[in-house]
Image (cartoon, rainbow, N blue to C red; front, side, top):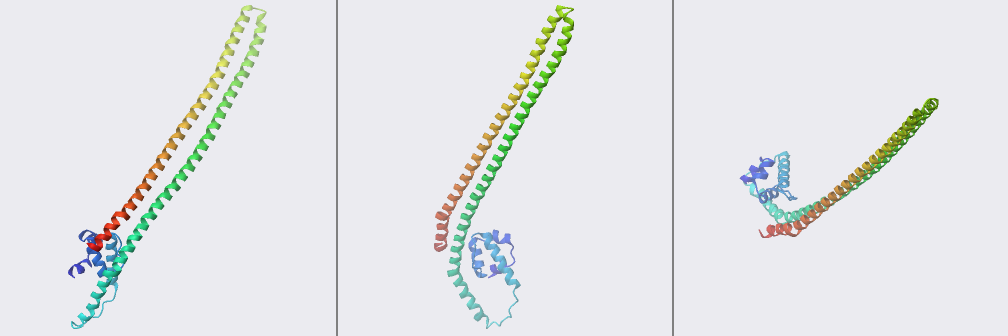
Length: 262
């Protein structure tokens, strides 16, 4: 009785650290708690709630010592009934409830993982499509820019060539040497413009190949990461199922055996 009175002023931490689970169950039964829970923390919460409810109740009228045995005797009988009947049923129901909660948690974890994976795959496909469109657009822009530069170079060369031809025609009458130099200059300029056009095309092709290689590398990396994430999720689900199976096959049996046979 003194221990029971002492618990009425104990805090949550004191109940959890100073008392065993069996002691907390006995205290809960004395307070009329039917659903005992499955952990010491739940028992401590139930005891604190019961103590608070009793403190909030109006105080009963004190009785004379002669009447006390008549009042206290039914309480002891009610306490033994709760301990022998409802307590076992409550524990069994609590164990079943805990197992259902664990199974539900496992399903929720798997469903959440699947949703997250599907969302990641959709985002990845969207990013890949966007990257592909950007690469195609950039490739077309580079090719168009190269073609434009090449055509501009040809136009400039044609204008320069026409101007030079006119000047050379004027100079042909004066010197044959100038004509030969003009021919050499034309060939040099033609090669220079051809080389410039080839360099532009080669640069565009290299940039396009590099972009495609980078895209393929990023795609392979993302696929590998997704596979690893799926593997980790499957491992976690299997581990959770094994833990539930172990709890049902081992811990539950041990708990029932300890409860009935000590």
